[in-house]
Length: 435
Image 1 (cartoon, rainbow, N blue to C red):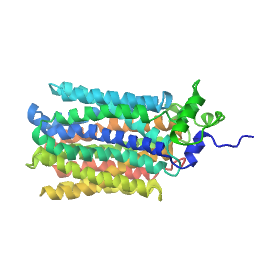
Image 2: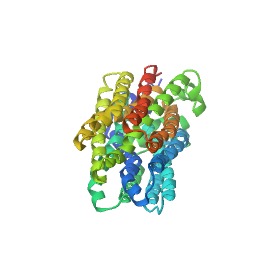
Image 3: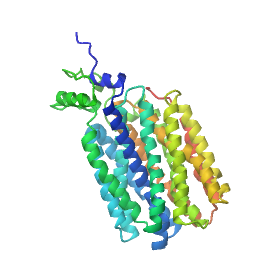
Image 4: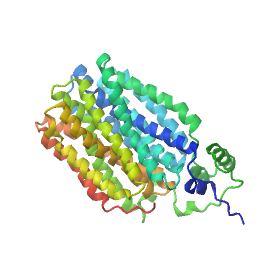
C-alpha cells in the first residue's frame, strides 16, 4: 500500500520552501499594488478638484467609482479563481489594472476618469480574491494565517509607498502622475507572475486536466519538494463542492452572512477615512503634498499594524484580535476631528488609527483562510469582498452628501465610524469551521 504523502499534504504539513515564499512575496507585492491603485484617486483628489472645479458631492462619487468595479471584479473573477485557476486570474487582473490606470492618466474629463476607475476596480477586485487564494494554497498549515494576513497587509504597504514617493512628485507634476506610476508598476508585475507563480496544486488536483500529473510534478520540483509518481485519490471534492451557491448551505451560511455584514461595515469606515483624509487636511489650509504625507503616516501605521497582527495571529486566535482591531479603529476614526489643530497632531492620531484600521482590513483575509475550505476560498472571499466593496461605495459617497448638506466633520466622523464598531460586534459571533 502506498503511504507516501500527496503533494497537497506535503505543502500543508511540510516546511515552506523558497519557491513558496517567493509566491507569497509576489502576492504581497500585488496587494501593495492594489493598495496604491485604490488610493491613487485620493492622492489625486485635491488636484482633480482644483482643475475641474467639482463639488464635494461629485468628488464623493468619483472617489467611490472604482469600488463598484471592485465589487464586480471580486465576485466574477473570484469565482474564476476556483473554476479557471489562480494564475490566469492574476494575469488577467494585472492587464486590466495596467490599462485602467493608463486610461485614468490620460482622461480629458471627469466622466472618462470615472469610467476608467470602474474598469480599474474590476482588476483590483479580481486580484484581491486571486492573491488571497494563491498565497493560502501555497502555504503550510503553520504559516497560512501569517502569510495571508501579511499578503493583505501589502495593501497598507502600497498606500505608504505611494504616499512617500508621490509627496515630492506632486510638487513637480500634476495629479495625473499618480495614475501613470500605477500603470508602470502594474505592467512590471505581469512577467513576475508569469515566470514565478505557477498554478496551485490544490486547483490542479481538484480539476484534473489531462496533463495534471506532469504539471504537479513540474511544480513540486520547482518548489523543492519530492516529486509524486501518481495522482492521489479524489476524496475532497465531494466534501466541499465548488460553486457560490454552496456558500449559503448549512455549515457555511452563517459564516458567510457574518463575514458579509462585518466586512461591509468595516470597509465603509475604512474608505471614508483613507479617501477623505487628503481633502479634509487640505480644507484646513495645507497643500496637497502635506495632505499626502498625513495619509502616508496613516498607512505607515497600517503597515506596522498588519504585520503585527500577522505575527500575533500565529500564537493567538484571529477572531478576538479582529474584534479588538475593529473597535479600536472605530474609536480612532470618531475622535480624529478633535485633533486637527496641527499637522503633527493629525499625523499622530492618524498613525494610531491607521494601525488598527489597516490591521482589521488585513485580518479579514485571515478570517477567510480559516473559515472556508480551499475549494471554496476564491468564491467565498470573492463574494465577501465583492458585496463588501459594493457596499463600501457608500463609504466615500455618504460623507460627500453630508458635507454638502452642511454637517460638521465631528458628526460625519461618528456616523462613519459606526461601520467598524458594528463589524466588531458581528465578528464576536463568528465561529470558523476550520483552522
